[in-house]
Length: 72
Image (cartoon, rainbow, N blue to C red; front, side, top):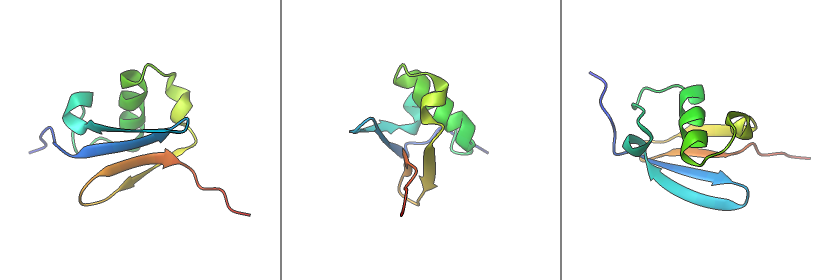
């Protein structure tokens, strides 16, 4: 059974960092990347496409949404 989680989401966007409990976004633990990005964008009052170049890293302790790393 999928439940709302207390998992924190760490978000890095526009030079700032924020932490939001997953349940506050109204999404489940099993939400896919697009659902997470859309929920975060709504929460931050940003256009949905503002997170297009961000990656999602899922750890046992948190979900991290951060800009894609560029090398070279």
